[in-house]
Amino acid sequence: MSAAPLPETPLPATASGAPARPAPAASGTPVRPLPVRLHDLERLLGDPDDPANPVGRHAVLDADERGEMLAAGEDALHAYGLHAEFVPAGLGGRLTRLDHLVDVMRAVYRRDPCLGLGHGAASFIAAVNVWTAGDPDQRSGAAELLRGGGRIAVGYHELAHGNDMARTGFTALPRGGRLVLDGRKEVITNARRADALVLLARTSTAPGSRSHSQLLVPVADVPAGRLTHLPRYRTTGMRGVQLGGLRFDSCPLPATSVLGGTPGRGLETALRSFQITRTTLVSMSVGIVDTALETVLRHVRDRRLYGRTAADLPHVRSVLTGVYVDLLTADCLATVATRALHLLPGETAIHAQAVKYVVAGILMDAVNRLSGVLGAHFYLREGPAALFQKLLRDIQPVGFGHAARAACQTSLLPQLPLLARRAWRERRTPPAALFAAGEELPPLDFGALALSAGGRESLSTSIGSGPDGPPDGTGPAYALLRAHARRFAREPDRLAEACAALDPGELSVAASPYAYDLTDRYATLLTAAACVGTWSWARRAGVPELAEPDWAAAALHRLGTPRGAAPRALPRPLEDALWERLVERHRTGGGYTLLPRTPHHPADPGGRTQ
View 1 (cartoon, helix red, strand yellow):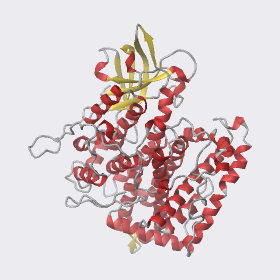
View 2 (spheres, helix red, strand yellow):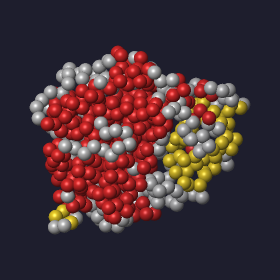
View 3 (cartoon, one colour):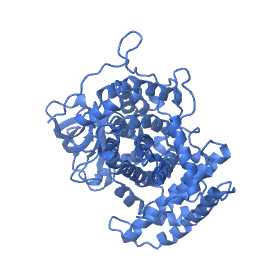
View 4 (cartoon, helix red, strand yellow):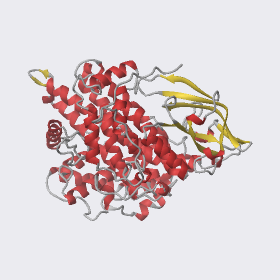
């Protein structure tokens, strides 16, 4: 069964009247500044509230009802050249910094999460493997394909084995100087639409991790009759994303299809690539909650109850302010972890797991709580708040797509005794640039990503050890921030004592709830450290809004909620101050993430962006 073809929609025209298409860029071509690129992207996407806009909210909802990708949106992103954002600048693309890529993709996710994943991030997930392990010819070929608007799909998983990639049954065994592919790969985004495939396969029958490789397979090179497209999977959320499967039957391919040319490195490549993709994809999904919060704010400010607007009700304000604080908290950890990929690549094997576990959980919980504010309106598919029900469905895959939150928590478990013996005793100080949201970063080195942090990690012990020591200042917000920061600063010692005593049997999926609770405490500590570090940097740098102590105090206050309990309500003065800031962000269109967005105008495409 094949997916229905998408309707054709004309691309924006150039001055000559011809459709605008991204031209392959030469290596070394200067990359335009991020504000200019964001301005161009927003201009192509147009006003989301305009009913006549083919990429507006009405069109997004119509495509969702049909279970299709928004064709006009794909054309706009193709005209922008979105896939060039995934290609390193040295290969003619625009990828110089992962935080800039996240900013661009958040703009897409805010408009339509299906476009974000189905047209964008799916190719990025595949391409990272090529940049990490491919040989020069493979990298050059993949870069040219993406710069021209082509798609790459990745096939890691098989339904029979879930996240256990070491048990993959898909084979690419040597025969007569070639590799012969046999087996199935399932739940692949763009399986039918891809121009090239990255496939994890068993290339040896010997036991062990060295029996797996990744292959780069141009679809045009697959002999006729050797590849069968399996039926499309229909989904509740991300309805427009084309999920399918592939079956190869005795399909011969050149031995040079192996990424990097050396068999046996497939699992290592995947583990390194996951550090980038798990971190950045979750961070991109912050854009979904940004739009969800905006949708609910509009609703409560327009809806009148008991002679006043719903926004005047104390409970509504409390919930929305709490979601705003939680969104800032999630963005803080995601941003610090994204910067760590440039600055601390030896530690990001831990950060990536924590981002998936913590940030994904915060984002899903935030949208669920917003649905309670909307009440009966949250499931309506028509009207001013109709987009919300789509966002509520589309956010769910952030918790299990690519890898489940529980799997990431399990991966953190064996790290705990090593951290107890090393990181929490050594107490190394991370670079100050780790917390400098939006500031310069060194080039990304794909080869520097380590398979394991080896017990060395500096973020968790940074509270109270920075150049400013414990947070100082006067007033209730400072007092609350100081109290929580000091409590979290003692957590590494408490964790070290508990984790050093863990039995080896507690370091696997069969671990007790107590051991899993330790991973939760550690991930929470990382989040608190990211918030305090970011606030301390912002105070020294004089960054508007971020330098104020209220958001950081509120973040730590809510992070101190016991596991399984409802989020802690904020002290009234703190809640009132943050509500006013939330309303101001709503009024100016600045969004609800760490660094506010600056509306772009054709005459002034500059300005600070998130």
